[in-house]
Length: 84
Image 1 (cartoon, one colour):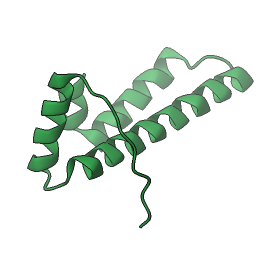
Image 2 (image 1 turned 60 degrees about the vertical axis):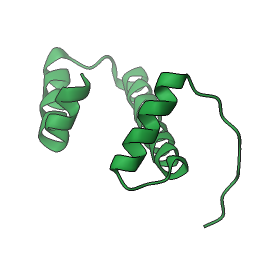
Image 3 (image 1 turned 30 degrees about the vertical axis):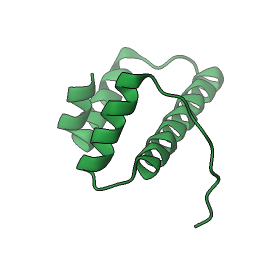
Image 4 (image 1 turned 180 degrees about the vertical axis):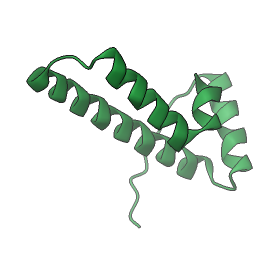
């Protein structure tokens, strides 16, 4: 796989935590940061889709929000609750 080498600056505590997380996952820091960036891009794409959907159909109801939360809990489980 081709890669593009760049230089990034991170807060010291973020750099340390990211390095530890990468090590815990058996990844290089570059691979871990790549995965994190890819996940963030997926999240942002999803957020844009929700905004577009709401612009076309109206705001999500409280029931729809609750249903989405329940689905996320089912799919993501404990990982989602820990990050909340």
